[in-house]
Structures are given as C-alpha cells and as structure tokens.
Image (tube, rainbow, N blue to C red; front, side, top):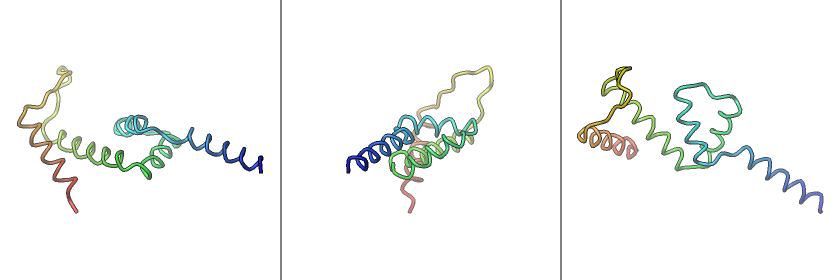
Length: 103
C-alpha cells in the first residue's frame, strides 16, 4: 500500500509540473499570436484550457479584441504607443460583450 501512495504522489507531482497556472496560460495565449509554441507548451496550454473556463473566456476576448483592433487601423512603426479614444474603447467593449453573449 505504501508503494501505491508513493506512486500517486509522484504522478501528482508530475502532473503539477505539466499544468500551467492561469498566468502562465495567458502568457502562452498572448505569445501564440506572435510565435509558434513548442509542442510541449502547446499541449500544456490545451490541457489548461480544457479545465479552466476563465482562460477559455480570456482567449475568446483576446481574439475578439485583436480582430477589431486590426480593423480600427494600423499603427505606424515610428508610433510606439497607440491609444484608443474613449469612443473606440466603448465600441470595443460593446463588441466583446455582444460576442461573448452569443448563443
């Protein structure tokens, strides 16, 4: 019986090393828009998204925001900071809310 308990502990420790925190998952979600994730990182992210509703929502929101920012206009290379007007922020928030509440 003691050996089985040790195996369980080892398995749980191994799974904990594989599983991401929400912070780690959000970082990988953001990075995946710019670089291809390694097979291990991609698998870790998919495992996390299977069990975390909050991160799935974050991913949906992120896709919606990125899509609409792309349509609002491009940022010139010399302009390193880009701020949305209050009207643009309100419209973007409305679009995100509408998309998330779709059946």
